[in-house]
Image (tube, rainbow, N blue to C red; front, side):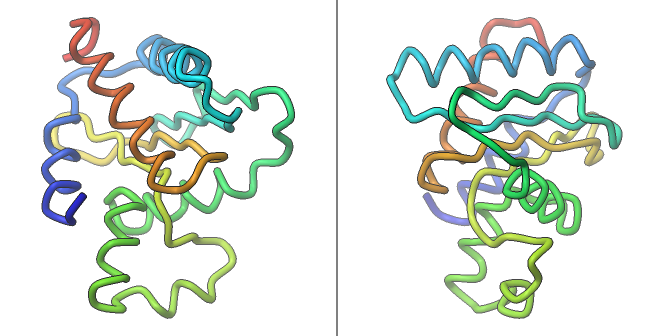
Amino acid sequence: MTKEEVLQLEKELSFQEFNNHDAYQLGQIIVDHIEKNHLKNVRIRIVLDKDIVFQYLMDGKKGVIWLDRKQKTVEKYGHSSYYIYLENEENGTYQEDEKDESLVICGGGFPLIIRGELRGSILVSGLVHDEDHQVIVDCLRKLKDEGTCK
C-alpha cells in the first residue's frame, strides 16, 4: 500500500455521524474479524472525543502501551500511524519521533474523522503492524457497508 492509498482510505473511511454505539459495533466487528479469520489475539481501542469508548484485550493480551503509543501518534499527526510509517520509510521525516517512547512509527492506528475533523482514533495491536492497519481498514469498510454509519 502506498502513502497516497492510505490517505485516500482516510478520506473514504471517514464519517458524517459516529457515536459511542457505533464504536461498540466497530469493536465487535473487529473481534469477529479476528476470530473468523483465525488471527492472533489483539488489543483494540476506539477513542472518541478524548474518551476511550471501546477497549478490549483479547485473551492472552496484557498491557496497553502499544495502544497508547499508536493513539498518541494519530493524535499528534492527524493521520494513520501506517501513513507516518510509510512517510518515514520513504523520506526519514519522523526519525526524531522514533526516539520518543510515547509514540510509535508503525501501523495499527487510524484516525476517526467525523465531518472532516479528527475526533478520535481506532487502534489495533498484536499482529504485524501492516496487518493491524489492514484489520482496521477491513472492519471500517464492513461497518460502512452495513449502512449503520454514514
